[in-house]
Length: 616
Image (spheres, rainbow, N blue to C red):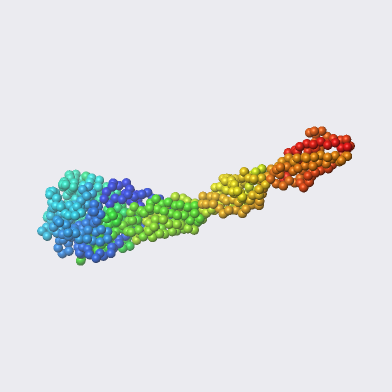
């Protein structure tokens, strides 16, 4: 069967009824370039230390109530009455208190409604029988219910839609039969079928298709030899399918494989030779895959689907010469990993996590493959990561600033399964350090300017933080700003500044410190303490202002005027900061009004007190 058909059937089974062997599947996404599902394959299981002896025509079914496969009877030169169970690893021979007689060709099915295994008919040492038995996981119980006539080689399937066991045909005392019977869990009835039915036959293949909700019947041995037709039963009528069929055969076991959502058939006998081919029915037509390995040619082998290990189990059969006792499993690609999640904001890497698939396809999961897909820059993807059982993996070697999704698949002995994609992530690292370009002083504050980092680390800078030393005062601003003002500083104290940039991946290294800068303001008013006159020379003396504004004075402006308030707007003279007196010459008898203003780099302070002096 093609990989695309396998995928379609896997999706379709999500809509089927809950029935034996049915699995709950999840939606998956398989982007371009994803690995296609692996081909199905047969794997021979290790020979157990002890197990059923070589035999064929034994009856086998998976008992969902006990989680084990049950095998009864068979033929190895004489009919057998042994009950064996397979737990997925080893065979165990049981010794129930009661048991059906030695039989071959008995029909066996698991009744999901009653949670019992049901056995009907079979061929004993004295001919065909018509007994109905049930297995409860511990012992066999004969049911006192009349029903189908004695026969062997009939087939039974549990119809999960009608909750009944369906039986068809078999070989009775007078030859092949074509009657249909239904077991309700307590009694047998033969429904009235008005449409055409399959011709009389026995050793046909029959299984319930959980997807189409039909019982599927193929082939068998009829009155004229091997048959090769396909029929479906919908609970009320048989319908012959107009499809290309496998070559005619009988004695080919068939079972619904929930891992692939297909019905699987193996081997058979065409009346001349045995066969080893595998065929699958996908609900519409037959196809024959080419497994890498396959059981040897055989017929009348036993086949059951184990819903615990999620694979079909094959045992024994007849190769045309000898009875067989080997055990095989039919495996397909595992399901897709679930809930794949990527977490990034890490430097050139991302952590990817997931949950295991709902099914391993019948073969243990050996590991997982994770492949990076760069959705930003073509050619940058392809980084890989593999695990041997862990459900997390760190993919490295990514490009910071590019968006990535990660494609995860499970790997078993048959290959890689379908893929599931993660969410998109952006690998990144912290940005580089910003560069402080200047600091401008203000009154009790300083304004810091900077250039953005040359490297953002792959994701945009979110904010900047500037810190003053000493004191630790700071400002924290969004990425759109390239300056900030820090207030509450002490005028005259020298401050240096450093800063960092932060993005989603972290905080940058700290920048280099700026040069020391002092906050400052204009100085206070000086105090004129005297004005003396020596003929035409007037001398004033003063004290410096109480506050120099946080920075050393550069000097004093001296203002003169003929009347109060008439001093000039421009200073008469500038006196350096180291002098505290000033003498000037004026006309005899002239009165002069005088005041001072202290000066620093922040500006000119307020007026001092005013004095007046008259030259003699």
